[in-house]
Amino acid sequence: MSAQSKGFAYRGAGRGEKTSPDRAPGLETCSDFTLKSLHWPKLKRQEPTLAHGVLSFPVMLSAVIFDIDGTLVDSVDLHAQCWKEAFEHFGYDIPYGEIRYQIGKGGDKLLAMFLSTKEIEKRGHQIEEFRGELFHRKYFPRCKPFPKVPELFERLRNEGLKVALASSGKKDEVRKYEQLLGIEMLVDGSTSSDDAHNSKPDPDILQEARKKIGNLEPAECLYVGDSPHDAKAARRDGMPMVGLLCGGFPKEDLMAEGALTTYQDPADLMAKWGEEKTRAAG
Image (cartoon, rainbow, N blue to C red; front, side):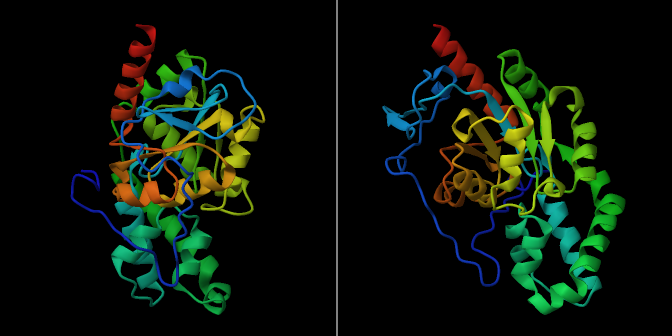
């Protein structure tokens, strides 16, 4: 069962964190977003525009880049439970809700929300190693793909778009997720926290993903993620982003960090993508 269906919707930041919304002007009322961006004319880069509820972009869409945890796989609660168990193993009692809201960040950024610099220097590597082994042994077998992910990827590729993955997880986790989802042959490139110096919400992972699929400009790509940390990373990279609610993060938090709109899950995104193509063809 997904986090959203169980009613989870964690708000707020971790200890000491402050959010800093930086919405593009004129996008506050984008409640009826459609994927008109599939038919962008090739123009000099400008900001997205909103007219009659339809968001349009000034350059041709070339690729769609996806987060994994909470976006393609129902795993956010499992990651939070795993981190809590890892913290407790080393003597730290941190509330589950606070941990959960930080899922989507790289492990280094998550640790920094709860431990001092001295504690991280002393135990950070041990905690991450313990958590990684624990997740693979106990929690990964319980991860379930969200519906229609391979079908969505096939549709995008059939329309001439490149498809890439950009995850805060480790490289071996990304590889296992590709196998779990059955998308190994449907991905043009993938990046993980191992490929970047700085993890999400810094934009490094997205920048590396763009390099792997042809050195594309941010405005030529669309990022799909489930957390405010995904939205913030995309905003910092200058890449348009849409959010999926299946990870259990509040819609308003995604929008506050720059998401253009939200969909329920990959199946909903595919359905709306198809509707827009039919509308455009008609």
